[in-house]
Length: 201
Image 1 (cartoon, one colour):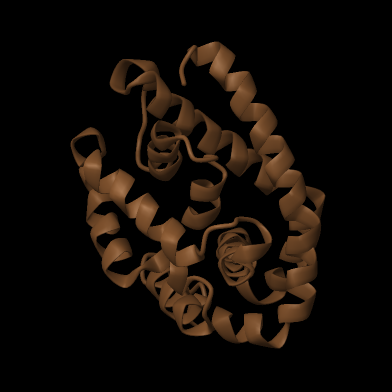
Image 2 (image 1 turned 120 degrees about the horizontal axis):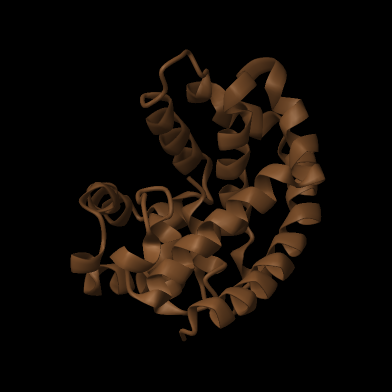
């Protein structure tokens, strides 16, 4: 659910961006279904997710959430990290978050025929609500987390997770600041490694 991070960690490669965005919406043999650059992006998306899920700092952050949110702690942590990336965007990129978000939406609009319908249904709402920018506001967090909570099978309590963020923002920002530089370094390395495998870009 951390679309902004996946967009940023595509490092301005349009095809990688497309794959990085749809990583949770596709199954099967990637090389048979997609252009090599998009398949690379899907692969990168999954490597980023695995790195995040197993990182010790992320696990520390989840310990704060688990007493209340249990199995949903990982999803909520991902959303929180997009909040901090959007809110403090100017620490990571020379473009404004507004400019970056419009560039992302334009790339997706230009390549809709290559993307799964299930993703495009979500993208319609993403673009309309400018999610990548809205992530950096508390109202955006409330809307995002409430929306995800409606998709859960069990009582996730995610509808109140924006309040937890408000109460513990300083501590959670500390976890983000420790983790995200590691994720950037890993993602750059993995992208170069995958480029050799896919012989693209």
